[in-house]
Amino acid sequence: MRFIGIDHHKRYSHLTVLDEEGNTVKTGVVPNRSQDVMDFLEGCQEGSRAVIEAGRASYTMVDILEELGVEVQMAHLWQIKNRIRALLAQQKEEIREMVEMEDR
Image 1 (cartoon, rainbow, N blue to C red):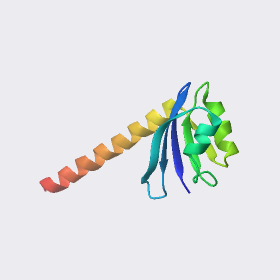
Image 2 (image 1 turned 30 degrees about the horizontal axis):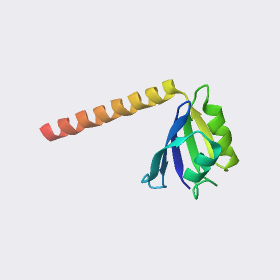
Image 3 (image 1 turned 60 degrees about the vertical axis):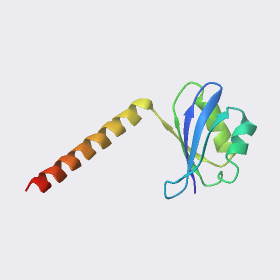
């Protein structure tokens, strides 16, 4: 299984493909044409999962990915920002706890 992250723009998208361990398999800027996306994702379609930022034009990319057998999830920017803030707050708290343990 591969994980695909997509930053979708009007004419092109930034795609990053990760393996199950989170290692980058490939990354690139791809024109938003069906054949170009299919060529870029060759070998990592069926059973892969993708997340794409929700936007006015992102549904075209969703259609292309679903044709390839990729499970697609839409992400709203505000949800992504809230999740990042929560992760940063958690990391900050963990660092604070580590510092306090070292001071003892």
